[in-house]
Length: 307
Image (cartoon, rainbow, N blue to C red):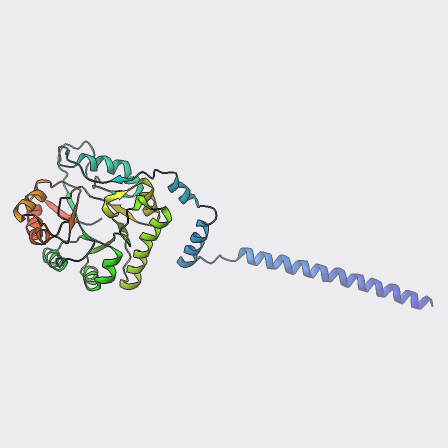
């Protein structure tokens, strides 16, 4: 009888010791697993995963960058370079706007080689040549021929409709080293639309051009030159510089093309360093005078550059 009690007592001790050991092993395993999971390097999310996360955040709590965008003014600004010029023949409104909106990603005029109070032309005089391509009117090929002949690079701002219909011309622009810019998917006035719609207008065309042409755009021209502080900041947050202009003239009406001599005179009279020239590729006049304008500007010491 005493032997049985002793045996039972020893059995209970063994059972208790086994339970303690099992608990200790389980705790050690859990701690070890936590350590290696915590210490393991985190996988960098793919661009699609990041986009999905960002998209999800739009329906929950805004990110800091989104809050910053919404804190800015949504007032629509209808851009025009104005008719007042400084000593360097630069539109004063373009100079002021560059100083005001440059930090939001706006490009109205290049001031890097000068300053607002410059009294003389800088050693390096630059011109940015840009073309808006809302639709094709039969003159883009000739413009590309001239740029190629003169070894000049320019920016062509295309819409979604142009990207879909004019594949050969878009491909030629890219193959010949021209820059292709985003003129939005549907050519809406951006300040009249919500931030989400504006984001879509930029991203739809961006993705289409990337998928179909293997080209990634980084320059935006807002339709009609209409923008707000919010749309500038939105584009900037998406990796885009918003390109306005410091020279434009009435060249968009294809049914009423201007006189070649008079049009060339306007382009030459308003030459200024850092100038961003907006020309419409639907104009037969622009196609006809482009070579002469390039030669004239170069003879005055200007060089053609891109943003």
